[in-house]
Amino acid sequence: MKPVLALVGRPNVGKSTLFNRLTKSRDAIVADFAGLTRDRHYGTGRMGQREYIVIDTGGFEPEAGEGSIFREMARQTRQAIAEADAVIFVVDARAGLAGQDHDIANELRRLGKPCLLVANKAEGMREGAQLAEFYELGLGEVIAVSAAHGQGVRSMLDRALDALGLPEPDDEQPAQDEHSPIRLAVAGRPNVGKSTLINTWLGEERLVAFDLPGTTRDAITVPFERGGQMFELIDTAGLRRKGRVFEAVEKFSVVKTLQAIESANVVLLLLDATQGVTDQDAHIAGFIHETGRAVVLAVNKWDAVDAYQRQLVQRSIEARLAFMKFAELHFISAQKRQGLAPLWGAIARARQAAMRKLPTPQLTRLLHEAVQFQAPKRSGMYRPKLRYAHQGGMNPPVVVIHGNSLEGVTDAYKRYLEGRFRKAFDLTGTPLRIELKSAR
Ligand code: GDP
Ligand code: GDP
Image: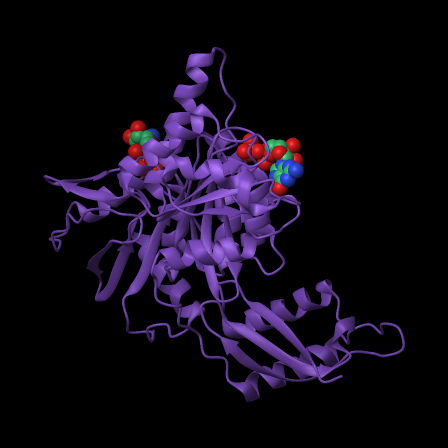
């Protein structure tokens, strides 16, 4: 689970600028989920081996009236803090201490989350005198940064991550093979029918009771079995058991969604037939794609649309989710329990494809056949020479191709190779990555 850092502070102190630094630094994997919530931005970033999620509260549009601005801001801030493992409290070194800073500091003290006090816009300032007043906030050391110029940001980030006392990430994934439980995340924007589907599935199951407190750090998984296959459903919204049904504690949690997707083998992405593919759907799909997880697409509420609307939905999927063409597409009604049984097979196939072993001799033979059928175009002085291929990873499968002058291989040619590999190994349900390693 990636740790979650929330940026809080009054307007104009530079939170958005800092957010951009933290998510778009040179070695950051960038994913900005601006489209997921109206008023909070989520992004992921990485420094060295350490990955994190950042929440920025700066993006909301204040409504008319002073009172409502502050109320809305306080609400946003509180929600971001609740989701975070640590808070970065930003103040403005140039403007100095403001009354609102005291209010935020009080709130932070009350909530007791690890907190870092950061004075932004401190470029060209001598630390001592000008920053001294911020010690009044009683939050300990003031860390001077300049988000705009990138000064002090790295060491601040180091401190924030250190404050969490997390173990250094290790690359050791628990060994997964075709017999281990399939880790499944049901993802989708609010109201697509995730809870309805999960209750339809699990309502009939005799489940291991689970009613753990849902902090952001704990991924709660619900184990269950279908047709001899074990599954672990990864919670995306703080599921609680309430009598016979499950209830989402939070209606929609971006952080839990991102974390569930990352720790899944297969993501079942739900769409809503009555809405087609929306921006939010496309954002979530984009994130899933970035993580390389296997995917099954299911269009829910199929019962509620007529033939014409069905066509529109199918077209919007072709247009907006073209990058997920590898995924099986199913049409279901969670409410009317229609079309649900085939999902299990699709999920199992997607996992199998994601874990497929691609033997080196076969890959290399396929590579040679593909080149013989259609050679890569000459680029500059040299024609790329593709020599041999081996598998570089699973879930998603990675094919590493070795050769010479591979910089000249075009994206179109990579897609051509991908198509040949996909066909030979039946990789429906999983993305496939191709890496080129040039000897020269
Ligand atoms: P937010 O409302 O807290 O998200 O603040 P913004 O990130 O939108 O920044 C508010 C203003 O401060 C913008 O005009 C920024 O260009 C400026 N700003 C942000 N960081 C710095 C900085 O490190 N130094 C200076 N001088 N200005 C900054
Ligand atoms: P979630 O926010 O993704 O968990 O969505 P919910 O499961 O809470 O469902 C949102 C709304 O869609 C509820 O009013 C459900 O009754 C309705 N809904 C869910 N599945 C279906 C379905 O298959 N068909 C129809 N017509 N409505 C559905």
